[in-house]
Length: 305
Image (cartoon, rainbow, N blue to C red; front, top):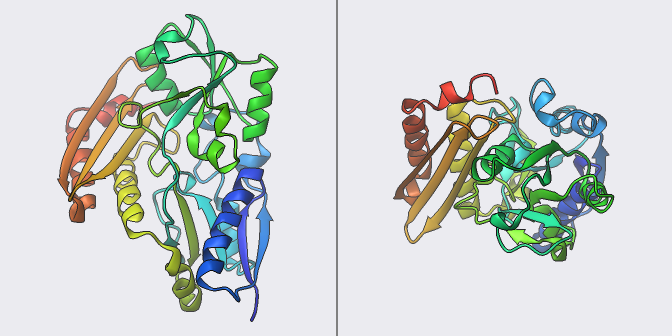
């Protein structure tokens, strides 16, 4: 059997995520041979600028998708939140495996039990305007500072006291076995994550029927519907790749509950909505909450961010 080639970022976390996908595929197809093809992305090559200052979209995905389109790989593995909402022609997201914990967390070298425990003037490292806006809305007395680099680099910068606290995605720490570093969990219903945070997207060429059939066996239909609803909110708002927008959906019985917000980067103008409807119509309800936000001024709030 010809080995399947998987394109992925070359970071430690990306490789861990890719190996997780490989394990799932081999559970379904024990004789499958797979090769990993690490790809350097624009986001990995430019670590000096905050992400929101970089022009364009797909900083962590474009080169990987190009590898797939040029048939130098058969599969691509992405953090789903990094994929632009506009699907690249010729490619399709074939599988969304079960999601890791979507929450944001605080990491620091002191004991804290809530956001209120953070000393005024503390410097919080974050790579996200979404996190910055929510944090400053709740604690305008804090200072946020741009934070780039892989997970271990960020933790090292904390130990070097370049920051007092880091705010990060729980999923990356869990996948790297670093969950003991978490100082405070932020409830994703209250502190909204990025759309599809914690989920992986396994991409194939749209015309590669054999690979689509193979990869489709690791798709988790419920996870896919939930994170697709979150991404639909983002798609409808058209805010740009790194604007202060969050969305979190969860299945409650036979219903889907969606929370979303849009904000100025400093949290000074903050719009939040919630909606609930039948789970089987998740995308319809995502459209509805986006329309409510647009009617309430979300696009005006996001202008210039």
